[in-house]
Length: 180
Picture 1: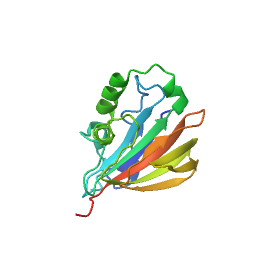
Picture 2 (picture 1 turned 90 degrees about the horizontal axis):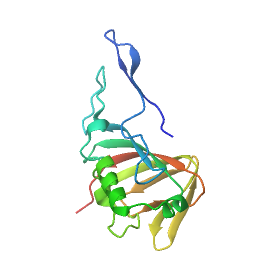
Picture 3 (picture 1 turned 90 degrees about the vertical axis):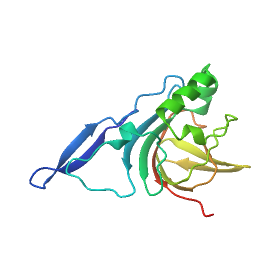
Picture 4 (picture 1 turned 135 degrees about the vertical axis):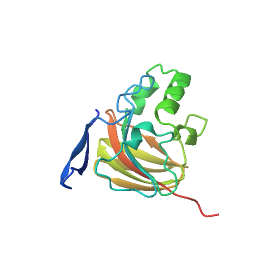
């Protein structure tokens, strides 16, 4: 389910041209969580620069969570929850793979395996395909359909796919700080 990423830049004469084309880093499905995938589409620093040939910093991030003023764009494929429940998944191997493939984000998850996590980011999430459930805990849930947009403002949440088919979401994470 990976999609191509197209990055533009400029040639020597200053004319627009395609610079990068292809599947972004990390797009292959996870081995220990069948059907789950996270593509690291792009990353910007807090002082982004328009360069003739943009650098793909997303491929080498130490953390997919952006620092203050930075951004990270991700495409995430969520398999149906029921598919994961019956897959005979080794939780330790799945957690190790998640930490290796999505560094920084994995550490934001609660240790009880519930999927709840909280980040120091403001996130824009768009349902590209399928249906998702935004679970804020304590019975606070919102069903989302293709085209719906979520603005996640540093709150504790979990994503659920209670449908019978994969769902895809595109996220832009913006590094933020909480007031003291």
